[in-house]
Length: 532
Image (cartoon, rainbow, N blue to C red; front, side):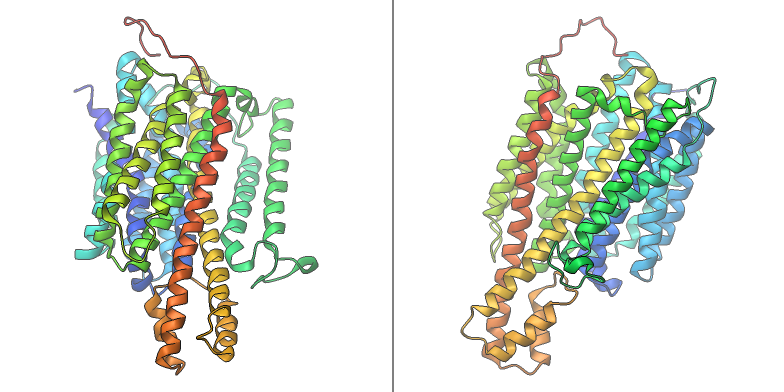
């Protein structure tokens, strides 16, 4: 048997796992039309997908310890294929959420930790290092081709074709699972911490849900909050409840450890400085990337009116640059410390987003936009090229499975919070600035301002300006008033998008303190030394 066949099987599975979100991000406007919904609902679906994986990734790793990694890998792929089939046939957003966000998310939570363990079980020494590099490159390739595949399919056929293709790939992987050697399990299998699973899932879910609803409910001052405790919006109370549940989760884990039972997470792992820094950097990286990837398609599709394929082409520089930088970034460790490379990546990211801010105008500045996206890809690729090795090398062999689960959890949590937080900031900025614009516009009669204020005080979404024009026309407003209203809304759109991108810059700045505990010495490894 060719020794690289197992890697090909695992690489195909990795490719499918990373393709989805890239496709969804460039298909937002078409999903809104096909499923008769709005951007806020699609934002919720995208967030839920990442959230489900973040909530259950560690549990998926534990299940692999119980039933075997190959069995967990197989079951996860079957669940994922069922979810893809349902998604391809989804008639509305609820079915889309069940098939994509829930079933595919749960399947991925089983597949990804098992995939990492299967690499270690099928390869040793230098071959294992090569295998991890290939898997990372394939992940970058999935991000790179996702916007193009999604844009082409959505524009020329339908976004549903992508999910049919995923089912075909998964069936091919399942046919080859027998090529994978299952790594040996511990003599004493761990007991499953079901209480810990639900406490962590509930805590994380409440926090992301609160962030997601902040734009609608209001952050502190209530807008359309379902209830108003003590006169405030529900948002801070939901966030506080999530933090409290996570605190209970920590206490429960400590109790299980002190009693000799197996916890869901060995919290002592988080005391390892390099591991903690790696996880925090992973979270920040994915939070920023998914925040930008949520904001940019809104600008390209709903402001400029580009279709999904045109959006994918405009976003290609970030994807290609990220792939190239992720593959080539490992070579920089010959000359530079890990911390230096990661900080360079965050610095490049900040410069890229600042450049993007200057391109958010009524017409697209093509060259500047492409340069900004390429810079963003370089920054993200440099970060990704270092952090995986940091996390895995910070623990011994017995802790690698759990460290991998924590790694994927931090990545998916970052993705979920990125979409939810930046989405809430964009929506809040849209409403507040639009109201300010119309109140200060002398061309608008007081009655129109009052009517518009009432209309946007309820649940609102980021819509094209054509919909605002249609609403104003249906309301019987005069042509001059309609033009003024649409002009104010278009200005508010640009302000809201810039607010989201500026928030991404601040998040990148906040990530720098976490990098202090990354390895600061340049790695030196004898040529004859094998990678463990």
